[in-house]
Image 1 (cartoon, rainbow, N blue to C red):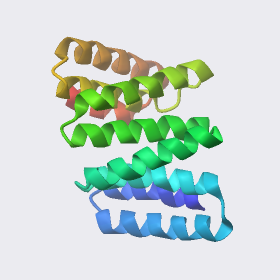
Image 2: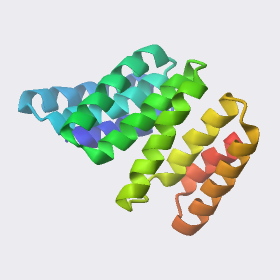
Image 3: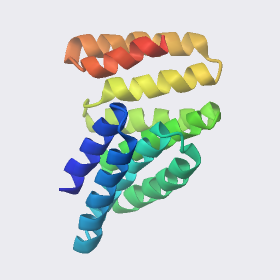
Image 4: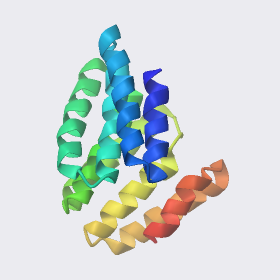
Length: 168
């Protein structure tokens, strides 16, 4: 339930429904807290970090994201560690600290590559490219966008492909 609330919140904020996104996250948080389910709490932490950044609350997102990364690392929640690193990297970029976010995005991608997983890779590359642009590394960003677009073509992550086009 908490995971569904988290994903629905991300979709809601992307559609411009910030209050609904926050409400969904709160509902998911209540259930995760009542159950005492740390993994579900981590999922909510990841998506709340994304939503707060989308709502222009990157400072709050950064604090939550850093705490979520720490929890996920300690508990070895590998998939959520990747997403928490990425969300936290994005919050740093939103705060004008893209150079500080780069290592987090790079760690996210390296961790994913080490597992053999590929889901959301285009999203990861889009965030990395955006941080590279914010850090003035335009040639690297161009190469990352090309890599991401190639991934989209091979794996069909079209929604992330649209965001990659925006970065370029």
